[in-house]
Length: 118
Image 1 (spheres, rainbow, N blue to C red):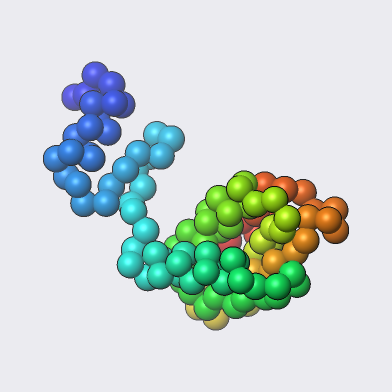
Image 2: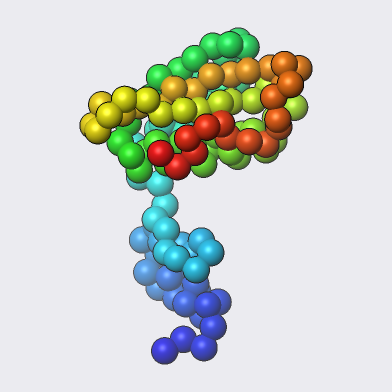
């Protein structure tokens, strides 16, 4: 038994070291290679895309969830624009649509858009 969650975290990060971490009170895995590629693609697109541009990600549920988290990170640090994300479609054909919008249009900074978690 572990006397603290810190001991468990040290064990997981030091001894196992296989991409496991602690988030809240549950275990989470580091992003997969495909999720990391999705993140890199989103960040690159977000830097250069004009306002009102949209990007379509046809990715699995876990990869969509990871991209929603990335949207939150990007929106927390942006000043002039934000990214809105929403999922559309059914089953394996579900996809994430990301749109870059101006903060001047009255959007709320720091939010990730509708569907965060779908």
